[in-house]
Length: 261
Image (cartoon, rainbow, N blue to C red; front, top):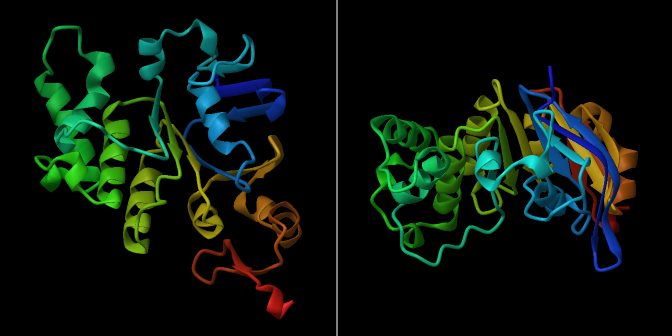
């Protein structure tokens, strides 16, 4: 069986600077992967390479066993959906209209959405708890509500791979947990890849964590393998204390102020 995403020796440059360098990776179905790493380490660039927003050379990235360069934009939209870091919208669409955009790859030109499209949109909005906001203009919603609408759009797109770039960055702790609980339920027959800054939430929800530093994969593995005191201190340049979460058994990181070192 082909892995949904396979990357071979990917290098990507901005001007002459290697943002991603000789990176190789295979991602399986039925898993939620978190990508972590310091600011500027190449996390968002990697997602944009996978989406072919930032174009790469042939024979670097394969989606379902097929070179990403051989996909049309429409074909790729049926394979991968994306929730970006910034979801600014210039036009005042309703929340429902935004989520309906996720069905665009399946609606023929000059055709209207079908009853099935509408059913999929409603289901996606109910899963992210924004159905009751469906008639509200997107720019009238809070940042956190907007983020849940865009996650609903990704769900409605019905792809085997979902990429999320900091999906919980604008949410309060309650909605962070609600949304990650929802995202975690999506991984059946899918591959979920989320850039996360909260290492403890990454530990709680990830099947595997990919730690990127200076455009290279430092380590990929289970939360217990990746989130060690030595590795986190080395990569983030910060002293930390580690304990085991009494409820989940997962590693829990406590950053230490210099005054306590």
